[in-house]
Image (cartoon, rainbow, N blue to C red):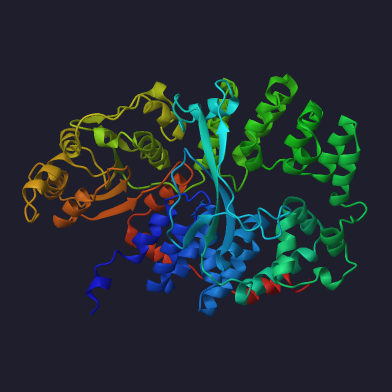
Length: 604
């Protein structure tokens, strides 16, 4: 028996960790974890990919892209076919990232002296960037690019921004930049081969059969579509004179197409006519901004842009509109607000991400902020709900100082997910447990925004005594089925105890596990515990003590969770137990390539 393997954390636990983190385009560590867990249990991995990507239980695009890349590179036919089908539904920029994870890639980055110095690891290697061997200056060819120094003027906008973001202190008068060439090994397949090649060719073929779909793809992601044709050695439409080939390689546009409209927009100078072109052809903001200078962006043009934006794009574009004065124009301001209200009923909206982007915009008026809150509340209600009678405990001890804001957000998310007829009993705890009484004037108990307001004045201080919660449960005779604790698990009596007694064969009577066990025995209950583990000071003391006394405990390890990945937390916490969640995942059917091809390529 492989004792080392027996002692490893279960695959599902390691995989769930990756669903509760946001890589922010730094997916190498996630890839490394996925590769390892795939090798340990490829069957569970394939079902989990369906659960995350197809069933929509993961809102983190980076993680979903890693799932698809791993499946495409799998040695198992069922996995390859599932990856093939998942690949087809991606927008071009995401499909391109999947391809990069499959092949590996190099990139040149700029490192700033105020940033954490990059280190090799997880298949990533850094080296100083060099000038090309074909550089126009013979003296520079093949040589390392020198470090650059940027002086920070006392009143420069760059210095002000860096100070505001707390990236430098007031004594810093200059920063240095260094160019690095970064090698990402990823899955190391190197070329578009196997199922990735087949998936990419089908991806292109489907769009070739639909001019509108292909025009949209090229408008937003020309370089990726061109790259797909090059890497698969495919001639667009099988015709060198076809409009796709003529546009991608020769810049010739088909009359009456949206691509021709972009040229028309560039040539037209009348703002009203430009606005008509944008609306008629649904030209994306990124392209319009590349053609029309800020000084030429009139209210009519901004109105046209707002009209064609998707709900998610509108949320993410609030800073762009604010910067260009759109919100200072009464008519345009009203139009944008009215369109924001429509986002509440829109599908496929990452409300938390959009709200976070909008929240970063300074100077939004109170009405706009309320609309954004309302949008977030309504969209969050589309996630799963927590149906069990729940007690929610929020750790506000001193050890949570670095994570209290995230803890409050996580708690607000969990609280709003409880059903209105079954609201959570909510506690704050440090050395004592404080029961949060809900008054009528507090508002709707099922809305995240009202919970945000309720928890606004909560700050980290004191020790960690979650056992006080059980005593209040007894006093108030609370009827609950599960306890969710948002904590770093640094329970005070366990920390002291573990320092005195390394054997851990006897727990102190005052610890949370012992108090809950006594409560369960006294009242004939089997209350289970879910620990949402966050913070830089996180340990597993409470988990181990609960297991020791026989209380069922599940841990959602939020090592690097942020507000973007919080919806994934709700999707997990809404299940009765991790066992139930795992069983639900294993019931998922992997999609078949033949079914997709028959539906979308039969007439192509």
